[in-house]
Amino acid sequence: MQEKQAIKSSPLLEVSHLAVHFPVNGKGLFKRQVGSVRAVEDVSFSISHGETFGLVGESGCGKTTLGHAILQLHDLVGGKVLFDGQDLGKLSKKELRTARKDIQLIFQDPYSSLDQRMTVEQIVGEPFMIHKTCGKKERREKVLELLDVVGMPSYTLDRYASEFSGGQRQRIGIARALALRPKFIICDEPVSALDVSIQSQVLNLIMDLQKEFNLTYLFIAHGLSVVKHVSDNIGVMYLGRLVEISAKKQLYANPLHPYTEALLSAAPIPDPTVERSRIVLRGDVPSPIKMRTGCSFKFRCKYAEEMGDICKEKLPELVEIMEGHHVACHRYDGQAGNHLGKV
Ligand code: SF4
Image (cartoon, rainbow, N blue to C red; front, side, top):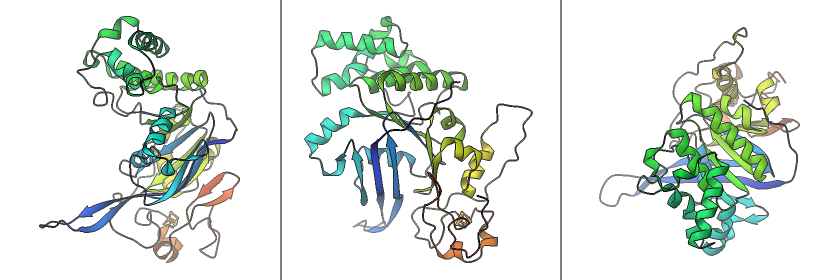
């Protein structure tokens, strides 16, 4: 599989202190709100033009909610999203609709994300219809061009989505996402539902399209092996918060957060002569409903005991430890009084 070269330019997307909570309602007649799920909490990062930001974490950690919050599909409790200099939260419905032409989504599951009753022409041509950008004849020509771009033959135009394999369906979904020539695409685990043999083909297609159309990506995945090939920078998410952000090379060479260490130990190594001992995390991800003090990783962290009370009492802030390498852990922020870290 191809590797990405590092790119440096100005930010296209800037996410600052983003927070999304979902109400939890009790039983009874009035179903009063009894709590809230803190799905995304105080998340900040930026993505430069032409860059890919890999976002990694276990299922339920808030990755997809964060992607949807960028698209303004959820009400924000706090924070803002600047896209191409525009604060998306301050746009009118009409302005947001226009801005969304530039921000598209590739879905995780190509089986459920495409309407089985629609033909390929209808699926890929739908964005042109919604935004009324062209007539029927031109639309058909554009759909044919898009199919060619994603490697689908022209005879598939009148076929139904249900007639295709997972990999072909994902190509159709990618063609649809490209239709309005967006600047930015949120790739929400685009290969996790595909056979392993197809995954690298679709990943290579996504990377080729980035070069061809000068695209910027937020690439969501649940493990570090997939994002290694596509990302420039990587953010690791745990229980709604970013716990580590770094350039790809630095993160793989020197993971700082204990959660990143555990994720990395689970990523397969292509060289059979290299051995890596796997770190098995204790327990499950705690409930995001309960308010807790201290570090949210403390119940599963192998260093929590030796760190004493600080991890139970104080939430670690995401701080820059080395240039571009941020981590939220008291082993590195000096709060524990002694520096136990390995930087
Ligand atoms: Fe572990 Fe403490 Fe760091 Fe949290 S702050 S990851 S509990 S060492």
